[in-house]
Length: 391
Image (cartoon, rainbow, N blue to C red; front, side, top):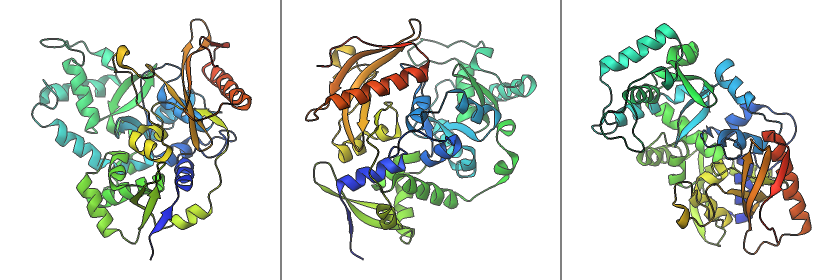
């Protein structure tokens, strides 16, 4: 079989379709199906406009509102929280394939020095006993203090203990109130039938690799490993070696015209044949959106260089503290710095940068204005104000 070559425009289209960004963000919303399509949704506490997880979901269907995710987590129990590359919301159906991640996190955290001053087993047991007695608790229910020098990322013993038990799967997120996490015993959160389903480690690896490839459409081995961050590079390599009937070698054209060797699902030709051009709807994407998260993949496919500069000193920032990429169709056409001022009930536009080489017509500016108006409605403020010049 000859090596299938996928041109850059088709690779972009396939990737955006995999991410739910090819169709207009309208119509009936099946929130759980959307999260399953993405595989996970990254959580983040920073609320510049809306918190990342809410913005990511809204970008795909603008009928989404924030309480909907809370209901799936705390009432319907059809999603759970754990760690992929970062804290994320994951479909509950995936729990049987996530057991190895609990074990991997435990093995990592049990290494000397991984979590400094980790409470002993007696303290961990005491945390679980208190939650069993009192019900779900947040970190605010405990009063231990940081021991020794207090540094930026220092955490008190109870927080270290709660985190350890959460990472290792003994505790689970019961609910969130204003983003504050409430911890409960895992058996109170995870459905008994899913908890009882025990799969071999090999079966979990097979599913994680196949599910990642299905959601990406095509992948380098390194991207496959990084998708869930629940398998190692050597495990991905071994899976590819034993799964040749499930994958197809392909060559992907980059935005710069180079060709890279990759793999795709066995049905890649059917996927390509059924693709349609992406909507020309303009979207303001979150910096933690799945389309943005892998900066190398983003640059390879779209020629769009982007970095998150929240932790970069202000004097060294190229763009700004929290800058949103602008996607139109299958092209990133600019970036914008916008912030929700809830006290004044204003969505403020602080900076705007057209992408070099992209002409901004009156029509594009109108589409940006409309998207800002939809964003204003999403966060519930009264007006959009520009504090920069767009000429």
